[in-house]
Image (tube, rainbow, N blue to C red):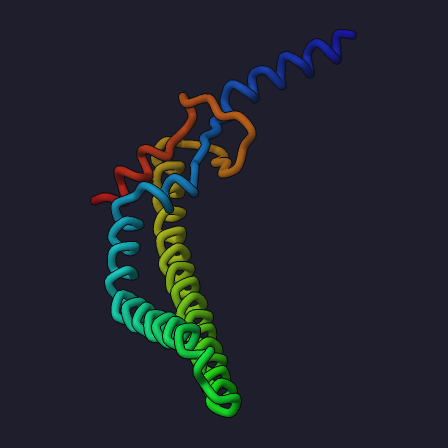
Length: 158
């Protein structure tokens, strides 16, 4: 019995010396100044391609509306030719849109990875400076007292 009590007392002393913190990586990706800047940069980088894609889509819509209007008066061969053109236009648009979306997603991921690496360096610096033993990133519940996310956001904005 005495051994169990002294083991419990030792565990209590050890727990008091143990320092834990929490870091919300998603908040950093959503709210940090570098994340907002990267998002703006990516939007600007892809704006011309987006505009071109919108123009291709508008041309397809106009051609489709014209086809629907003209279809009753078209010969069978002309109707088939225009249907093939519309199909090709639609396939071209879908291909360009898929490539655009893949490129955009890849670019966003590159920026998120770079920001995540920067944030983790800052987390390590804060942990070392404040003598934190462990920093947890995912948790079901976090007491705001141990949340260092605001410190990371502030350091990232410098």
